[in-house]
Image (cartoon, rainbow, N blue to C red; front, side, top):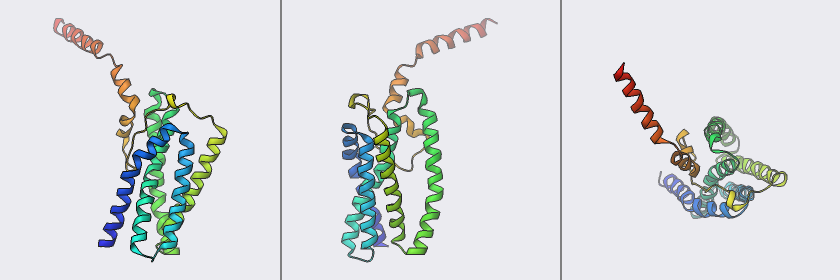
Length: 202
């Protein structure tokens, strides 16, 4: 039980520490290239963990911390890329679509991981992650080749978001605050007063 706690703690700690530096890196450079680099690093780290299974616990903990720091950044980076190409009025629909895809992955992932672990042993989980991360890297490279990068001033601000997010995560988008600030609350208040006066008169 102690080993499991240490492994989970190292993974979460890595995810906490690397979110900000990788996010700032994505704000400066093309985010598709950032995702490409992160996905390749996740694939390599997963491969090393799979090969090191049964090895020194200290090595596994270090690799787990690096793996967590990289893997937990993929989702917020992907969300930042999507938000770069969205208008404020499209945020809700896009968030719903991303959550749907995320939910499908949450259903398929554990089943596939269980099959890999049953077939290949504990290392099977990381062999599977290595394959998925490699596919993501190829897709990010393809998107980089066929699309045009945004200028730095056109990018939205990177916001660290947990993987287990909810529909309220779209409120973390910096543009949501701008939309709220532009909302005409005074007109709404005047309409409410007029409606109340009309009701009282009738």
